[in-house]
Length: 294
Length: 285
Image (cartoon, rainbow over all chains, first blue to last red; front, side):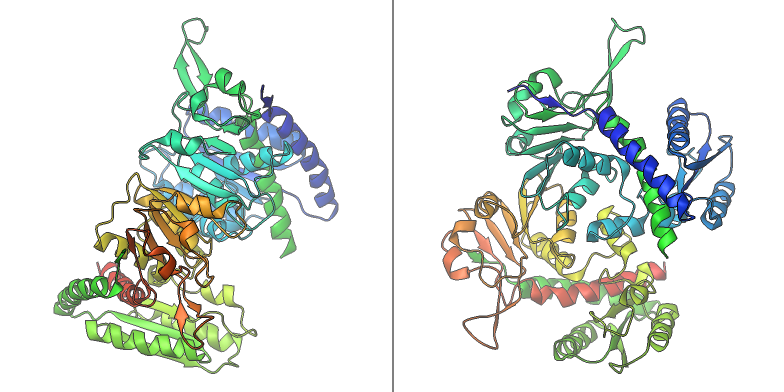
């Protein structure tokens, strides 16, 4: 079997096209989605993320505002900026780009964001709603994985989903989402991690395998069941002298060999990655809709 | 024949340890106190309240009940909860749920400060369970499961734990707590195909599905440890209750099993006590 490739770019483009319509529709009802982004410092990766978010907003007709402040900005100032955005109806979503410089308590800042505008889904109240299975902004990467499964016709209902990695950003939220009694969920979920005695024992059982450990090509072909759906969340840099940059990006799965036996697979790059920013935009629109209802 | 993981031994050991912690607090002039807030009085809740008052009292933890009539209005009940929330002498709050229909329960739950949320009734409390933030209290029953496993020195790290049931009272939080202890965790539920095989593959099976005696010999394997969290009306003995596990069918197969009654249930109230004491310690640190 040769796996069908689930292109994150294509799925993201589809979702964006729908979102664009949705934004127009909401504007017609007087609801204007808006994203406020706070960027502290000059970290190049953060600058690049923030730029792609702004471009996305522009493409979809979402109002966006970026506040860029130097790395030595105080915690109090950042908290004040968050508070202002909380109270400003222009913003249905607020994002503080992480990581923050060391002198700022990230948890304190994340907790200061109004939960109904927390488009990253990291606020404790939203994590609680997520675990309970109630409506809330869902963490973007996990949400993107769920969308990719649904769009590619791989509804997780009744399937055994094995998630490798238990981070608060991907592994656990995805497990919490897919175990619920809900559309796009109802799976049996196993969360496995590096402390397991034999990870392959679990991965071989997976109808849907999600690799989110952040270890380059840790999942080998002999760890995957024939016909499994393989979603690779990992983005790792490995040295490659043949590239001008000196490195190439690989995922957490051994792509070429697994593509021979899986039924579906996501590439790296171009797989889950493009979904994350799109789901952030999605959350910004969903938050606007929810706030507008009240 | 499987060894019974009895709750009483766990509860006794915890009582001894907690009594010492209360003495240490009293030496500093502090008495841990639980506030029970309720609207109406269902027989089950009154029974629980009576038991909790007695158990916590024996350890030196005070209990104050804030009882309102079943037809209490929203404003009165909100004010009651706010007063209890602001009362510095009260370290933990337990509210009987569900509230009568005229009350907006989510709004009232949200008034409980997370540091006093000893049975995980708030969203923020659930969030802390999810994100492994130990400043939050997981619900009492899943915590009792973990305390029982710990007391009997059952290793969890690297083991395969299967949680049968996905309720917010037990299944979902216990899955998070097992992950914290480095177990590999599978959550399955009544909608799962080949449910029996999935359960039988576990090293540790947590049965929390809420179906009387559903787990029989097809769900288990030799060497397995089974924790039965079910409390169901016994279909064969009206007025009695039984667990999710058909003990007679599995006790010849598995290694260890917690009985119902006399298992996890006997630890739950002690966990409520422990959380109230932890609240007192943290709030006065």
